[in-house]
Length: 102
Image 1: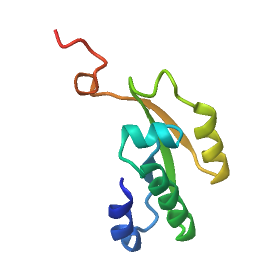
Image 2: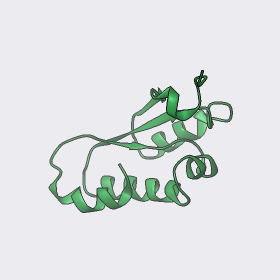
Image 3: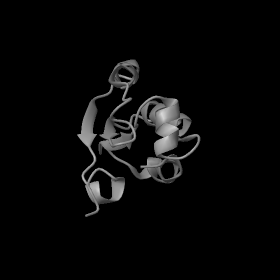
Image 4: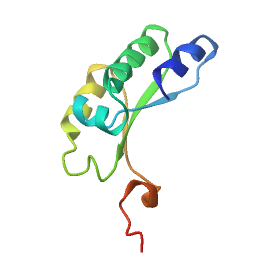
């Protein structure tokens, strides 16, 4: 869920857990998502916590972050905000470059 969509719907959410994706340290996350996305994720977490919205994090493991994934960093973010985190390998292998195109 991206930050802009989150801001639009935050007042309509009632006791539903939402998932926010974070794909590594700031530079890794930004290269995998968009420039500035890491700060947007942290901002969305703060907004959710401030408004009592239950969230958890997901870390999508791809070819771009598997070799340099900083799991410790993600766990620290989860601990800092008292969140659960789910490490998930990407499932659409054809479109992320993990499978041969042959």
